[in-house]
Image 1 (cartoon, rainbow, N blue to C red):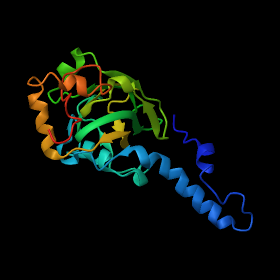
Image 2: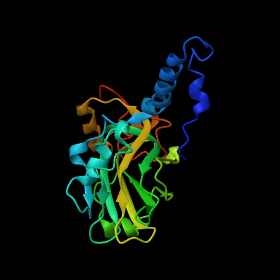
Image 3: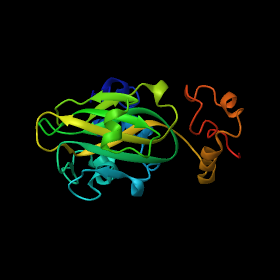
Length: 230
């Protein structure tokens, strides 16, 4: 899951056949190694100040592992650790409409690594009891590894995401669950802030459903959000 397709990256390295300048080869290889991830990495569109995490041992540590940039993904701190038991519930809002492709996560090769993460889209009202009884949009299986894991989601179910709730229900046996970094890959549909008001007019204009073909099977929450100047 954590392979970055190095073969594809070298195709961008136009100096790879220039044997006279090996130092440039390494520079290009390094930049190519980062670029493909950063091109689809969702970061500045995350509303970090509105991230909520239930059962975190340190306040704002859930937001901290999401706010940690890609370049610091291997840093030990900050780290999200659960408190009373192994469960965690994190709410991550975005500044508009997101087509989510992949969840990126770094845990560890220990028993504190989450075993599964249930994902729920466009629900800002979940707690542990409601999340436990609600069928998730998708459940991802987490491996025990120190490497960054790239976990693809079913794109047809995540084409119209305004916020994401992540529910860690169980880990590999430790009393606490630990997550050291989290990121998201996808396509962000640029929006002016006022366009979000369309969310609350979704029942007023049934034609919205016809204008946003392909943005999601359910013509519910924010189906008209893809149109500018509404």
